[in-house]
Length: 317
Image 1: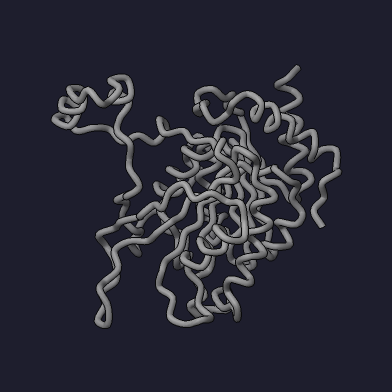
Image 2 (image 1 turned 30 degrees about the horizontal axis):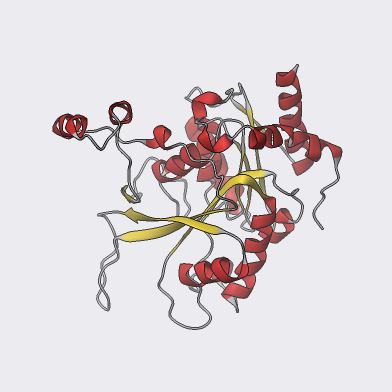
């Protein structure tokens, strides 16, 4: 059962409640106070166990890359994929803030009744929940596996869902610079706001970001590790400084690293005990940067929210 009545959880949501009343959907990251330190926690537990321990409306961004049920390993095998997924989708809706966002990576490569894909997740969200589908993002990459029985895949999909129409979205934080000629042409285009043009262009919903090669410096050992850049784009545009990001299929822990670098708080979990080893490697890669001492790694959810609450109360004094 979700622990809705703990005082430090409820008071820890004061900032979220205040921002909800303050028309947060029209704010950008520059409107928020950037904390000196943020909090991060990675737990080895089942996603449903974690979700049920979180209070209502407490998460700004849920960013997940769930198993695809392709029988690649024990963590990727479920007898009834959508029956299992429905449980964490329902809990995700409950814990997401009214201004919150959820991004789900996936594909449409179903092979049989047992396998899972984004089509089933979208269908469930549309007919069984109140989630709203805002965008489907196409992650396009030139480097991929060869194929003989089908056209070689060069993209993955991610769906962006919201709880209400008042979702937070900071486009300015992820605008892409124009080339010189593009900029001149854009400034002449009467349909475009010159001030926005100077900030850069909308990256659209097709993102060309290369996959990680085996020798990539970002690699920490996880087989399905996503590039920092693609995670960063979601974190920057769909959450704000000192808000809470949740990844309950943590895998390599890339979401945690990006959150630390972008001054967000992060809750992660994974049933694979190696996830902590992978995340530790991320931390080691950050040791030579300004981010190495900019976060507190909590041991439990209580202390995580207590730290955030204390920051919120202190900032109000």
